[in-house]
Length: 309
Figure 1 (cartoon, rainbow, N blue to C red):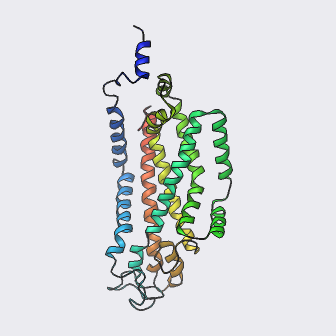
Figure 2: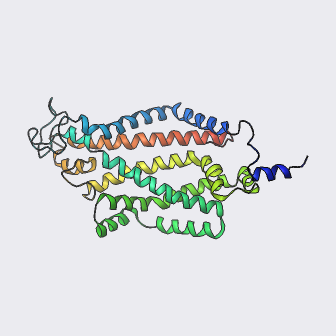
Figure 3: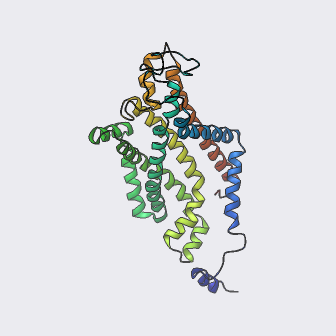
């Protein structure tokens, strides 16, 4: 029995995939999520992350005071029944400002990370698949951008274009692009060497179809782990910019800015400083735990010789 007619029919799309071929990726995805949720790190990370995300988006609604309201109580007072975390130097309720201060810290790194993953990931996967001169140009470009000091580069961009949210977002995305590209290129190199990619090429599939259907689904796990780790770094980076006065500007509430504003109250009202610090730490730790759980699931699948989706 010759395979030539079957190959030609497959290339023209006249032959359906084998039974169960479509179900296998779904089963592997469910197995990957079960592996993550089956670990203590995954459960704790997802639980804390869910609480912090709810706090970021629902906090301003449930806050007892407006985050910018001055004189809600005695200036620099400690915790009390009316003010759980006390007040700051302007008499603003610290607890209300903690509830309302996480939007910039969470949303900005996430959006910048998505932009960087789309641009850098697309370039990295394309270079890994094409190889040769294209891969060399993409890789050397990433290397040049990686050689630039990140904080110094962002400070130069902010100094030249201002410290608006859009400028900081683009600066962070530009900073993340080579890092996302390098990681996803490495993950794609392992996948493009697999037999099923060569089979798709032999069937005459288009490049974009091969990348979308065969390459990208088989590198989702390392992509998710890298995305989570970069988000953790981005949260700390944005909080640092706000602490230096280059992010959110007064009188808006922001966790990094609150640490800078309330540091003089560390001896009289420690919660004014420790509250936003704890919020930043919990958010970063929860995302890091999720990334560790995903990486552990990926390592376990590789040890068993499976392709994890």
